[in-house]
Image 1 (tube, one colour):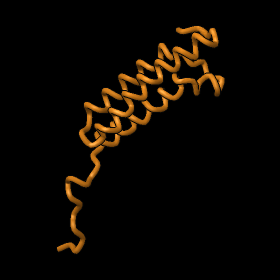
Image 2: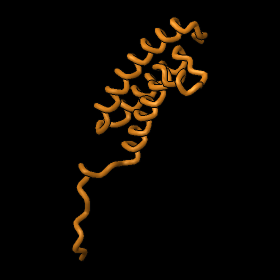
Image 3: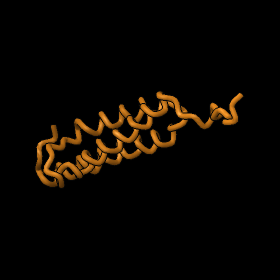
Length: 98
């Protein structure tokens, strides 16, 4: 007999939840690079390439886990806003779009 209670299934994180959370956070990072952070850090930021990848990562993260659906939804919104802001900055600064 053990005196330690096993953790509830509702409070445990499965490996799928962890991967979905990492994908959502990766989507936020790509969204930041697409929105103009890449221009500030002197990265070769192309919002026409990075924002759709961030959007796909966020959608995959939302479908993988029900635990991180709200985080994935916020990542989808961030990717859409990053695409608009990034494309606007690219046009204003006359950088290559693709």
